View 1 (tube, rainbow, N blue to C red):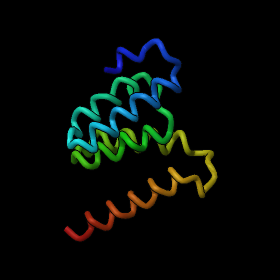
View 2 (view 1 turned 135 degrees about the vertical axis):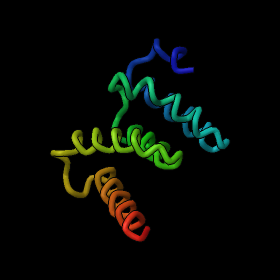
View 3 (view 1 turned 120 degrees about the vertical axis):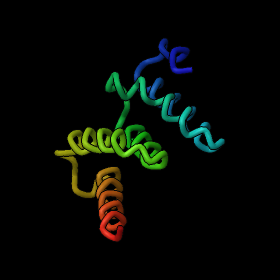
View 4 (view 1 turned 90 degrees about the horizontal axis):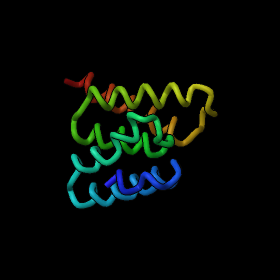
Length: 105
């Protein structure tokens, strides 16, 4: 499906891919949702919000390795962001939650 969007600019492509991934996710097709966003992630074409969505999909799929890669990429991109940037705040909350869950096992 992503190949069909190649004629659009990066912003339109990212928005369309994220909408498709969201629709697939809502239909329980998380693997397809991930596969929709992966090519754009490999080409570094995802905006911060869509990268965060991919991070969430990897977390949901228990794909820790890929989730950590996307998380590290996001944190690098957000290094100069305001401390109250919504995506940065969400990542920090998720990291604290993950740490709390792992410490109880």
